[in-house]
Length: 88
Length: 238
Image 1: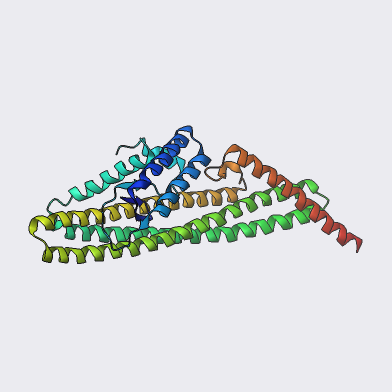
Image 2: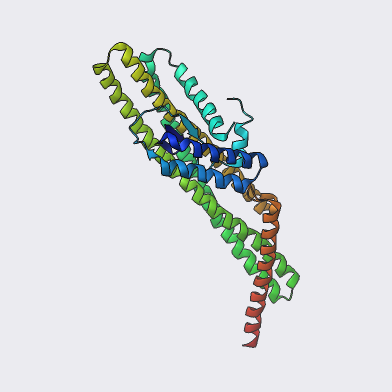
């Protein structure tokens, strides 16, 4: 499974990491909905840290499609909220 | 829906929109080359903007320091003349400027980080493009037409993802630079008028932060005043 952290790069992850990613992603959404800025930042950092620790960064010359796209490391609660109001 | 899947959907729709623009797979390379050039231009522009904004803010910091020194001397002169009320006023203005000046250091560091990021973007994009070109040649030589189309599709998607990612990064960097510039300009205008106050609280500051910084400034004014009095007292005793 390939996961891209925006503005950072792509990581190859074992499929087994997905369950933990989803769990953290759910918590992140809860914090986003609650408007809890600090909780959001903590879950965001934890989610990206998991990708970095479980994954192996792909070299720059590799060109592959991502299965998952994660927000950039410095995304704010306001920016994340705006993602749900804009059209895809 | 989670943030991860929302981000994936939005991002992938940007990538496929970019890919659809090159309908004939044989045009993909030419098209990518054009987009790469455009993107590199944007990265460079964004880098230049960040450098300009940083220099502007650095200059502003120098000017603020000049004003800080000026208010300090004014306070001293006022106290010498026995006008504690005026001295306090000057020290209040000084404290507000000191707080602003501290905020500028953070902005300068943020812009510097942005400059590094843009340089990194340009470098990574270059590597991806070179790799895409090389792969295209290998694919043409080793695969049948049908296989080659699949392989080219994969490489194109990979490259388009990178272009879309850099595009977003540039856009966010520019928005951020623009906000800092606007803020720097507002500080300049308000310091000229001598009405710098918490109208310029940093974005994201909540009322508690503002109250805390106000309390801190008030304490600083008292400390400064006591220090000046002590200095004056020491002078008189000689």
